[in-house]
Length: 489
Image (cartoon, rainbow, N blue to C red; front, side, top):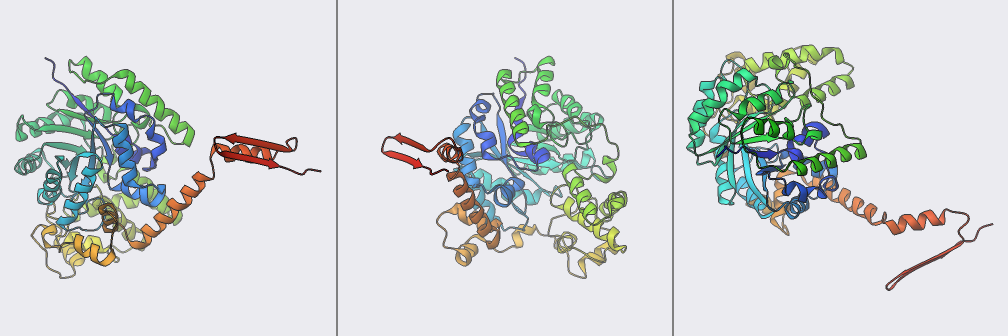
């Protein structure tokens, strides 16, 4: 029998984060969910930290209602959440009990698998997310983030893989969020993962198209021992997003693999999101030209656009090359942190300070000090001693797992900000400040009022009232009666 390549569809999470700034609403996805559920995907990613933030800050949506809607529409497919070690679904450094509560609540709303990643690939930091997922009855995957540096060698990753296997995961993911892999590196790295993790765990392949090489890398990985391919339906693929599902699946078939996907369903999903993009003015993913400069600064596509916007606001657009060069220099000084959230943001902001102020490290972010003193785990390589002294300001460097040093937070939050009607409210209180949640509630109330005032009946009444030739109208249905007489000169 032909080996089966399973597919992890990213349309509802990574893809619209990469192309639509995480602004896909419930309305945009609801109607197509049953079709997606019938497609044959093994997994659908539906939530990560950016998604939770978008629900609260920008979309005025209830994240729990969103998860319930997805579960109703696609009950058969395993839904997945991306978890950042130490930060869960936020930015604060959280205690272990926050992982237990949050993942348990997510499981109640239909989430069946988690993928835990750490910005330093410190496998100790991944442990709370993996253990909490297992306790919640989820599959638990660990993601090792790929980077290019003198220390991020195949041997480095093999060591991390063996550490992760000992944590009892269901699978391991090669996570190339920076789009830094090349076909040559795929040919050595993927078999190294496969051999180190053994034959029984799922090997996932996750890459992006920012460099222009994403589709080539995905196709190259198919025959090198992977079990699950992460990809996006075509309208939401390419650009800074993931390789296109349809193309990679057809190539897998041509290579003799079984994919288990219904291509008619794929086409219906593609057409749906194509129409959503047209209706709401969202961009369609377009293939990118190969960009060798990306391998030097390694700034992800979305972060680069933010940097460009910030510099433009300051009237310093001409400083972009200097900022990108400064990021490369900072990475080397800081022991080659991987350019992935949250460390990529910290490196980018520090580079911006250094260039704009004209003095390196005159202004230092609090979070960068935490990084230098061990609160983000073990750095890939030692920090430059001079920079270490500047950032740490003499504070000692911890060597323990950071999460083990943080006092439990769940019951403290319950006492200080409760009572809470449900655990879902407690999870949001742990991740967002009171003012943010107050604004979110107000925005949701306003949106609900607007929706109630924009029914088909109200539109019809307004339209008829505005027409001079209509002096009287009457509607009746069941026990409801609406009549209106106008006096016109």
